[in-house]
Length: 252
Image 1 (spheres, rainbow, N blue to C red):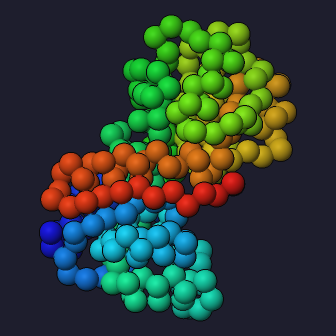
Image 2 (image 1 turned 90 degrees about the vertical axis):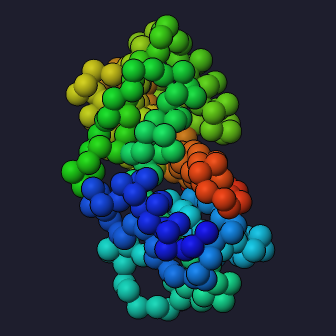
């Protein structure tokens, strides 16, 4: 399909016009005029760009693009290497940060909660003035060990960091992927039983103990594979193109 149509439809579906962010959403590097094959992934690293080129992808759609507001805009070093690799392969790069976190159907959070067995989803936690996470409840309370087991199954991780200091029966839970460990305070304020995120900080351990809440961190990268996977399936079903999620492992 036409590149500009592809980008416009993605932008509209992920509602980027309604989101202020930490960097640009949508097309970040313009490639060829036609889109036949798409690769999705977490971060537009040189390794993922190379994997997309090996698959003859015309577009690479990621959660973490290559341009950020805090970044030096000079094209040198790793940034130059990524741009050069994209241009040489003729790949269009699209990045969707907060829009992919918050989306109810192909985002990093709502689909994961559903896979964990959580129902009655509501928006949770705000960044840049928009909700980015989701919260809900289990139809029947589950144990802390069962929650850990479900996280391991849904995310494909072993031994997530788990500070299990909340109630024996978990009814309510919130999820914000990535580096959202600070939203533990929001979960405490809303009197939730458990909070799940990507990264972990030293203070999370103490707050979990002192506020009697379960805190689970599964890794920034692992927590944000969900959205790109769902987005690849949506693109393949919605457009007349091939789409594939490619994981470049990251231990963080």
